[in-house]
Length: 216
Ligand code: GRF
Image 1: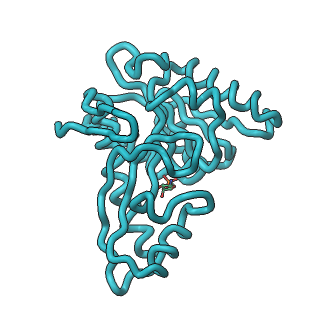
Image 2 (image 1 turned 180 degrees about the horizontal axis):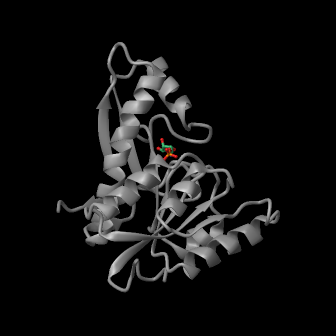
Image 3 (image 1 turned 90 degrees about the horizontal axis):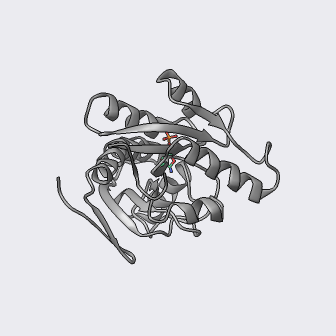
């Protein structure tokens, strides 16, 4: 149920992913090794070919393709997404490389319960069109010495919701966009499950745009 992020006693996640799904894999692995006290109730992708769907199925997690192909009307798509999340008892939604904007019904049903991970230190290097290797190209071109990972709440503006956690990654002189991509992705894989565990333990508090995460 959306009004409690825990279904029974465990945090129940809905993961939305459009691509390969290495962040989903990290979440599933940390659940399996006992670090993350949660379960993935459903994985949804707008891309029927997404590796994320295969990764979910390999762990017997329900994996669904829901897109504008089945629901050309955006209000119908929004309603279908919400029905699916609720139908799987999702209390917290984690976007992991999800390339579509969420509709107002899903956003409204999960206030402060939809997270995204971004491969840079927002508010720098974010916004529409800033995804994948493009982010790291911009970082290298700008000559900044520090980049990193941001986990933030999702609102109706791309990469804009309140920041929950960030972790820095130094940019070395010899870095290329590709080398940064790899290094930053590794940090994503550790930070996202850590943040989710913060939610599982009820250590996350939101006051307007300020988010406080207590140490474990
Ligand atoms: C990650 O870099 C994430 O930060 C961004 O999309 C990418 C998804 O990668 N939002 P993967 O599909 O989890 O491997």
